[in-house]
Image (cartoon, rainbow, N blue to C red; front, side, top):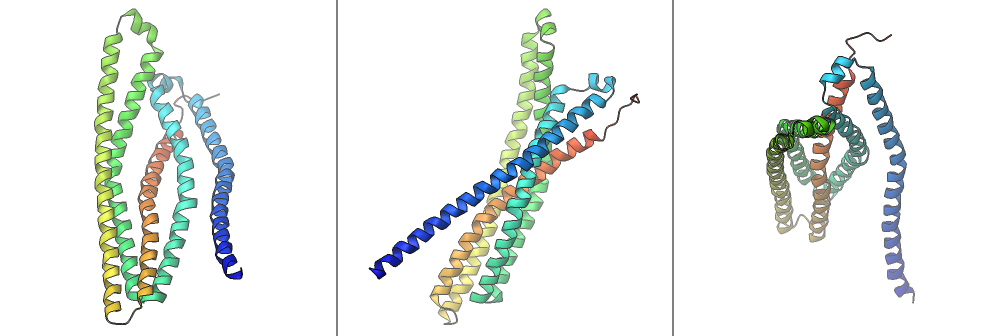
Length: 275
């Protein structure tokens, strides 16, 4: 009975641990939701007040659709950036440090150095290629803002459009803006495919080299097979946050771009002094 109770207890502990992980993640999300939404509300309110604090000449010459996209995208990016930095970047850094420490104790500093080098090359490649994609994403955002501006302006002037029977011309103008956005969006997706392939090439190549080193040490009798299995499990575990890291970098950099555009807008002052 005692021997049978041990597996049952271990299974129960495993299930409880998984349930606790899910519970703590949801509690974290619930607590962060209050903070993030309050920050988004404050940012939106300040942006709204700033719009009404500008002079009428600028407001009449600006495009309401484009301003709406800038503010909406920035408030969404604020939540994403905070979430990525607090709940992805920091835990990934801690996980990498612990994994490398375990690899040093199991296979020595050589394999750990190879793993650290693979991670460093992966991060450098991701940062470099993502910076190249930033211009493409900016063009995509500009095209999206242009299409949104055409849509909002056409609705705002619907009476004039109907009076001059310009529905077909407005539809053509909107379709032209959508075609530009379509082209830029395709370029974004193509560059993303290239980035994903490069990341997988680095990860698979680096981790295959590590397994080759450990296999040679097993053949030489310097490393037991069980340690190789453990190292393989560590590498498999590291591949998951590495995949997330690329998305984290892309979302974070895009978030800073969106927040930068809103910051530039908030720095604009009224040409006419307010009383």
